[in-house]
Length: 164
Image 1 (spheres, rainbow, N blue to C red):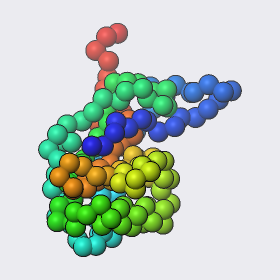
Image 2 (image 1 turned 135 degrees about the vertical axis):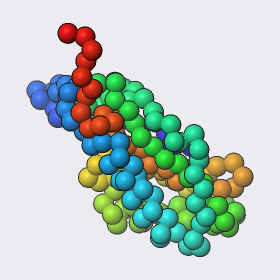
Image 3 (image 1 turned 90 degrees about the vertical axis):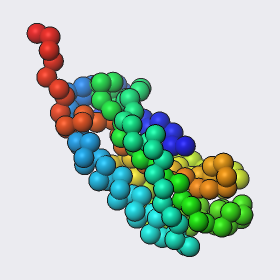
Image 4 (image 1 turned 180 degrees about the horizontal axis):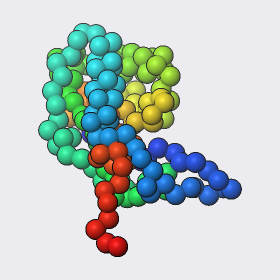
């Protein structure tokens, strides 16, 4: 499963985070397009070519919990997660795929933020937009590949407040 994403780092002024509650963000549609780009690019380099199956619960937007940029918790996090089916199911074969993905992500300039000692889980932050991307082993000896956006306003800007 993809872990909940924090939000993109905010500006630091005098050692304190600068609140950005009303700062415009990318839109949900732009985030989905970027997630598709990250997923498609990763799948393209995996051999043998996996069958990509959407994990349906990932269609639900997440809450912007603990925003790292000091912005509003009223924003959302957009994510998608996929099962990569049809790959060899041995542990060594799955580790090879993850190592291949790690090399690709590094070649794209993404920051590797964590990996499991057993070589079956990898986390990174995309550059320049800081989306969380992950690949890892799941039950049934299948890999999952996912991406989460940073915190965003669905339409790119805060909704007008109904209170004066």
